[in-house]
Image 1 (cartoon, rainbow, N blue to C red):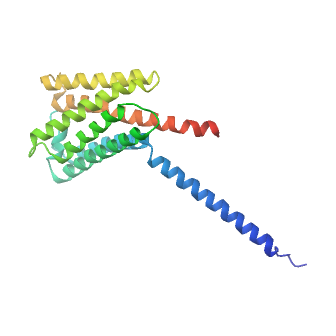
Image 2: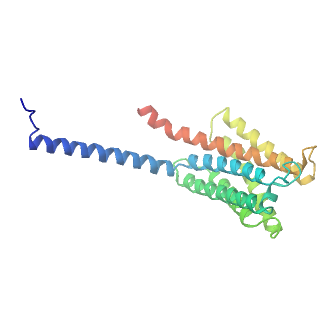
Image 3: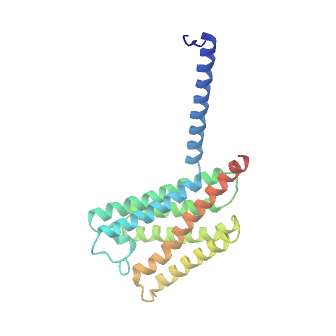
Length: 227
C-alpha cells in the first residue's frame, strides 16, 4: 500500500497555520526585546554592573595604581589602557543612567527621581569627558554632581519602594553623603583618599544596581500573575 499524500487544501491550511504560528512567535519575541530596551530597570542594572566591572579592570591594568592612596579619576589620566577603560566605563555609565531617567520620566509612575538620575548621569559623563589633569575645575564640578545626586537619589527612592528595601536605600545614601563630607574635610580614617572616595562611590553604585533590579522585578510581576 502506498502512503496517501495530504490533499492540496489540507496542505495549504497546514502551511498557513505554521506561518501564523511563526509570525506570532516572532512578534512576541520582538515585543519582549522592545519591552526590555524600554525598561529603565534594565539600563540601571547594566550601568552599575558595567561600571564596577570596568573600574576594576582599569585598576588591574595599572600596576602602579593604589586603590587606597589614588583618586578614582587618576585612572583616567594614567597609562593608555586603564585610561581608555575608565573613560569608556564612566561615560557609558552616565549615558545609560541618563537614558534610564528619560524612560522613567515617560513611565506611569510620576516621581522626581528621574531628575536626580539624569543629573547623576550628566555628572558621570562630565567626569569622563573632562579629565582631572587638563580640566580640573570642570572635572571636580561634575564629580561632585555625580556623587551628590547619586546618593540623594538613593535616599529619595525610599519614597517609591517598599520596606525593608527603602530602609537600605536610605542607609546607602547616608553612608555616601557622610563619606563625601569626610572626604572634603580631609578625614580619611586610615583608608586613604582613594578608599574614602570609594565609600562615596560604592553606595551609589549599589543603589543603582539594586533599584534597577527592583524595577525589573516590578515590571515582570503583572506578566507573571497573568501566566
